[in-house]
Amino acid sequence: MQIIRREFLALSGLALAAPSIATMAQAQAGPKLTQILRKDLEGQGDVVQETVVSIVEFPPGAAAPWHMHPGAQELLHVIEGNLVVEIEGKGSTLLKAGEPGIIPAELVHLARNESASANGKALVVHSRAAKDKPLIVVVKK
Image 1: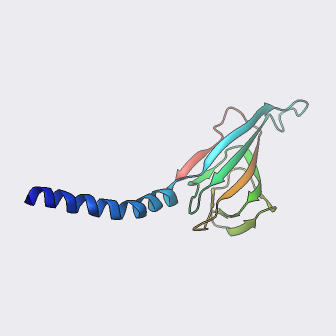
Image 2 (image 1 turned 90 degrees about the vertical axis):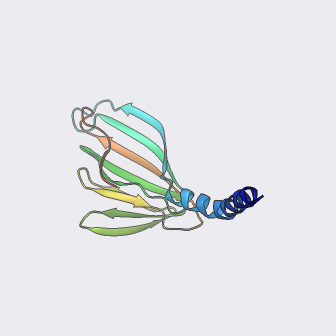
Image 3 (image 1 turned 180 degrees about the horizontal axis):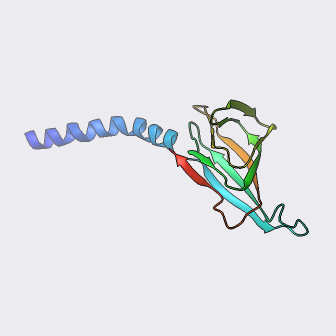
């Protein structure tokens, strides 16, 4: 009987903690990137060889890790919610729905959704001069 009671108490405690664990896991989930176009551009010579267009969805509290794009500038347009874009050593900017942002190539940066309840979504365009380099390099988490 004592073993059953101990297991019941452990399971009851788990059932009470599960919702808060799920909330913590959701807040720590990273953004979801859906690539919608990857195309070599014609008539650009070596200036822009490829453009990659993606939709990035940020759940509440989600952030991309510190990263950079070798040889690729990043243009983003916030579609939904608010996103904070931070460039290492240059501060941060709050972008609201409908606002654009640009991040020059080679700069370490991140984007995050600081809302505890609202999703954030952005259209992101990377224009790459060198396709032989990786598009994203994670610098630190």
